[in-house]
Length: 146
Length: 146
DNA sequence: GTGAAGTGCTGGACGAAATCGACCAAAGCA
DNA sequence: TGCTTTGGTCGATTTCGTCCAGCACTTCAC
Image (tube, rainbow over the protein chains, first blue to last red):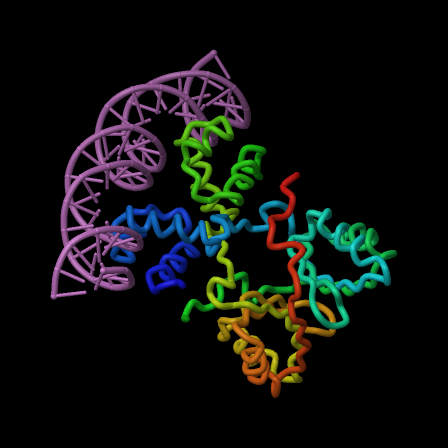
């Protein structure tokens, strides 16, 4: 599905997605039209979901992060999910097996905001909030070795 | 700190980080040398941590994800953290307040891998694993409004 | 085997984009 | 008031991306 060249292209782009096709081509020993075509196909096949940018949340004023585990009350599941989706401070949410139904990441400007946001779901779900103290591993791609 | 133009630049780059400076400039009504300079400063100040690419984990064979809560046994905290960092399948890890010490995201090729990886920390920590069934919110930036 | 078709690459030409330097206008300040 | 800093424009030059023709290699039918 993905050959070695595609994998190293992905690795390089993960570190710097604004690299020129020329430089990218040199690093994988291919001409620029060739890597251009590979990029096109990687996007087309959905291997590359997006070229994006990693922003320091603190630069936007988000000095706090929390991990919130959420267990909607009976019959409230869809309402809760909709509420999470419509609250932009929830920047990541997974629906999981086990007692908790959702695990979500919340970006906060202050601890007061936490209270405001959690209060909005407090009557529809049980929640368990953990404040992030440190990030030993920040978002990284999984290993490529096939 | 960040003016409106910087914010809209970040918003545009979050959607497509490979956009040309020319197009980016047109969208924010600035010349390309001007946006080039703003980009340079955003990077320099650490607002932009990296230009990167979002890869479909399934394309790399990772058909499963799990959220693992980890509570190291007394005296094992540093060993456990090192182990997490050295296990590339752990693609995200937060150190949090509360009973659990770490919350980590694990990418898996098969359910068998889960057993192998969790076994490696089983004698150093209590773990609680939830399999991801769906992702109602996939990584998105927090709201920019200052 | 052999020829036809398909795939994925190279290299050069050409138009588009990035960069560089010169210059300018507004804001902050002695 | 006039100097300095900051952040911008514009045009020239260089660099890059894209298009296209051609080539090598593989697959497959005969």
